Length: 289
Image (tube, rainbow, N blue to C red; front, top):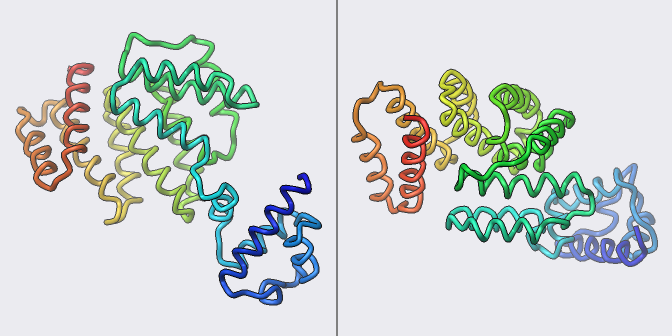
């Protein structure tokens, strides 16, 4: 790390420490001395990774919060791109998404991440226009990448959750099961836990479209075991999916229960979600029935 960056990190840390009314001796511990902290804050040296984690923890910040502060409390470029994709998809702006493909063609230094990020955009286009497809080689690249990463981070969850329409049934189900097994270790991290629940929701939505109702039930049960009363969006969506599945399977003969559910959402003031569900229902009935 260059000297300028060391100074910036040290100065930021000092600012955060002092804002909490903490002295260097309040932070120091067996593996982190006052001289080490002082040199770090003055930009003279950089702390080793393990010592930096200790220092951040000592001022009662998470590493993610510290990273957000380092980034001037701005959303990272990665999440900005995700937000742009979501907004364009909600507006059904296919041309805007295609322009985004051009804008982000060579955005990442590492080609693997470039290709993965572009696949997320392509998946969004495909969901709006089924005639838009990708090459077999791209599907193989995506599948190999997801299989090759032993420990998924939030990035892999994002890629998996937003490209699964390109995966075969076998790969989707295998990777979904593997994700559930791996993810048990991360439930204590709030941001990761939230992303994991949304990923499970995406898995269920994709499996409904593929008529894989046994696995819809399997992953719904897993998701329901994870949610709390605070997960109202997840709960609302799960209940909607159950109505959809019952209708598609013929267990519910008419659409009235679905109409009543959408009307209840509108009555509660959530017209945007009601509109989204209505669009989703039309899509499922068009593709499946």
